[in-house]
Image 1: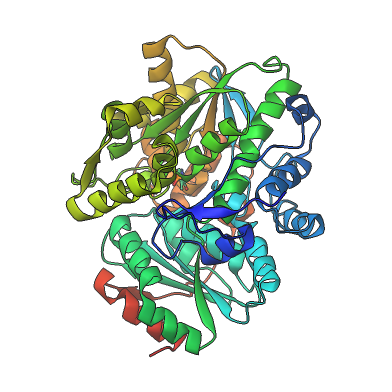
Image 2: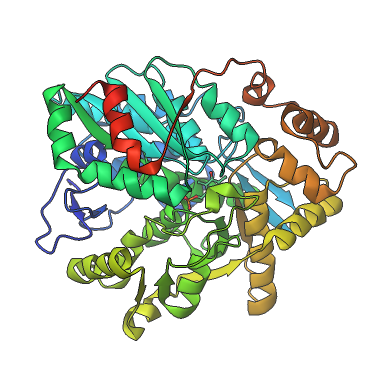
Length: 497
Ligand SMILES: *Cc1c(COP(=O)(O)O)cnc(C)c1O
């Protein structure tokens, strides 16, 4: 069976193959690609306890990327999930403080985006071959810290591709910034923006929709594609670890077959948790997906009131990858909760961009029952890091701590004590300063390498290789600009005038 894709905003429902959707990233009308139906998986829940991560990945990807051959997908999976991850399970569970922490940080950039971005370049170059694409792919990405590095790590020196990453200069940790500025690869470009993530992301979306720029690029045999979490080549690979977690819980005797579990997901652009929503639609026994936010709690308010309002103060927090006021992937959820109504979805998105807010009808609001939501402010986040460290000698990064704190509040408020998986999106080594501050050590003002060294003394685990070499690596990128100059910057980098 061929599974086709359509835009969330197109009432006619014009269809695309999976490989076309991967190449385009965003639909021409500004909407996001969704499958025309939810596919059926070719395995039983009980099989989950036997699958390796790679076997599971192949089954899930085959369901969504049906115009790829099995051999093509196998090659993609082999290239993506091997020794570039330091744990053979790829996404192991760690049982701590009464929860199961799903560790998504054993890849090359020690954050969860590696799970999708180690795979995406292979899905994309395969798609280019399948569609006789004779243009080089230019990946254009706005990052709140982790996407940019993870995307570059995936695309660096991949033939037929270039990647340009924009990041907010004042919105990322010093380790994150160092990771980006030291990125190798002749095809990688990094630009610091004088603005926040939403400025960068809004502008990147405009550049994707700029037809004149697209024509100028085409004249130079170049075409944009997106590595942001709106690309189906990033979204669907994230479904794999929800199933993998269930498999490991079964294997470890923590749950019985069919038992419902909860996931608490630290959320920014709504990509990770949306993959959980698809996992549930595919039949994984999930009771609640808990949408955890930091002080930028636009999603908590949305789930609790049905009103999305991006007009509010923007806070820079210790969990910068969640400092987001416009969560792009929420559009796909709107499409589903409106009953796959593209006209309604387009109207809501239009309202959001024109007036800055929208309110769901009561009927639509009632379709949010798969979710619960909450937020943790800076003090609660630090307190949770300290609580789990004291209880179990296990150190959370601030993003994971937000999810952990919100899960605890949810359990208290709801009385729902179903097994809880906390989606752990980054290694504490990625945010050493914030972690040390939370632990209230003597060295709480340590920065950069000093903070990493201090943290290692506490953790007593080997430094991930990427961190170990980070501080000796030379700075290779020096570009900065204002958001309004991003188009000019792109033209200069690509030598397109
Ligand atoms: C990107 C990121 C998130 C948020 O994920 P979304 O898919 O954008 O919701 C959370 N934690 C970390 C560490 C991240 O890098």
